[in-house]
Length: 140
Image (cartoon, one colour):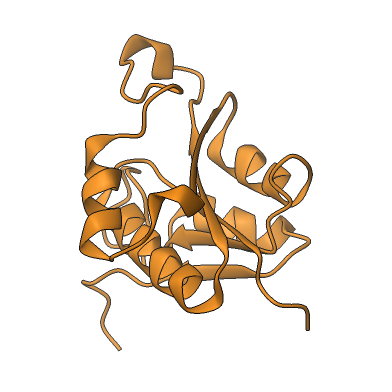
């Protein structure tokens, strides 16, 4: 197996996405990999303007500091499209991710599910390894 060089992690601002980012930062710190945090804008994102493609959200800067992750190995990418399609493209240039990292659930409306629809769809269709980081509320 080749060493990890690039991790791509999905981020929608949810608590589970933050847990996935922490996992990615820890893994990248141990392996020397870069982390590309990816946000998919979706169809209605323009109505809310939540995340700027030009500026890393302060919450992610705080997570990098908390995890003692060097931000020189961090990239922020905002891509147009649905979350699953955007994440599945991360295995191709320019990102060339070795692994996709997602939280078990995002900001969807189906409370109580162990895995969200985006995470499930990414796992079903990915051509590269996927890590689904469990929620802090997950029960064994």
